[in-house]
Image 1 (tube, rainbow, N blue to C red):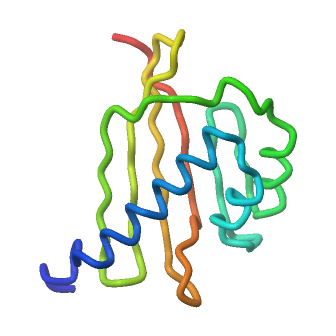
Image 2 (cartoon, rainbow, N blue to C red):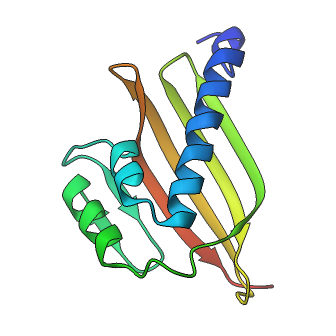
Image 3 (tube, rainbow, N blue to C red):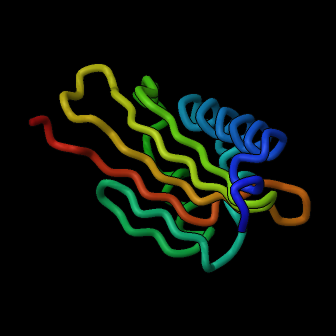
Length: 129
């Protein structure tokens, strides 16, 4: 990999756009969009603050069961890095009204069949210092 293939402007713009779509879907509890953005595979992972989910089905079931309110959050910082034209990592820190802790989210995105999909995600909270 050469430096020219890291954060190719067109690829970076595409990943940032799909990440924005994910964030809108998450905070509005748009389950069909969230389902579309995750890779439909038993290999997909989502590690959350209270759960370890293996496979698309488990992630989908978790989202369907969780409350659809209180999901709004403010992104504090965002870092997206693309490697080539089909692989990216996106990381944010976020805050939520009434929550003293800072949230962290990491996602691995892969473009398959022309569509960007989350293949792995991790969400956690950092205790206030």
